[in-house]
Image 1 (cartoon, rainbow, N blue to C red):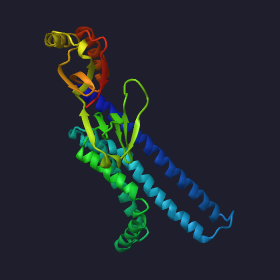
Image 2: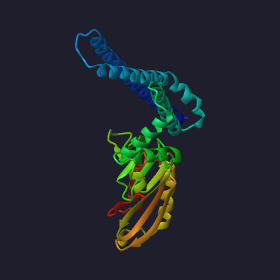
Image 3: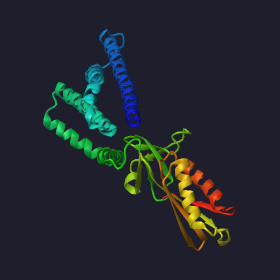
Length: 305
């Protein structure tokens, strides 16, 4: 219930941001129309002598701006109805994708209307699009790649907004997914305490492995090393008592494994927790281990996996 409420709230915030952006775009087109009409009026009243080509160009711009202004107004009035129609999809990512595809579709229709108004044939449109694609493909290859990866992230869903992920083997980029954008993904490593976050370029997700912890509990691990002299004689029974105390006090299912390597004897601890509580639970487990097993000289060497 809490997760659904959070996702609904996030969707409402994004909807408000979209409407705010549409308002700015609409006002921009209206402003440009007014400016162009003023110049046309000045030219027609011969207050200032300007070439006829200039006024004809301004008239064409008015037509273009008017078409896009009406398209923007139409999107603003209808986008919520379109998204509500697809609310059964259940995922924010799909609704975001549908919303942006709807915006692109309406603006494409507005562009075709502009071509029609200027008597541009389908053949000319095809030639124009071919030349434009050829000319800009190399210049904007990174933008195209970023858009392509964004589309994959929203459709294939290696992770979703609200998931906890780790990017790369070293785990230097890890945290809560806050936003999946056209050019980057926003990941917040400390969503409850600080305002810091990562902006990870979309192409990174093709170059580095992604580990998705999801939204529920996942396995954590850390190791505690100590000298042979610190080993309690009844270690097995103490570990069983410790497991019961852990369960009763912090309600965590934990496993302890005794082993050794070239650094010495170690106790490896496995437990499950949510991303937010993992550090807190690890601290509590460490304190309880030191107290129960009487390992005063123990040295904790955590290693998350």
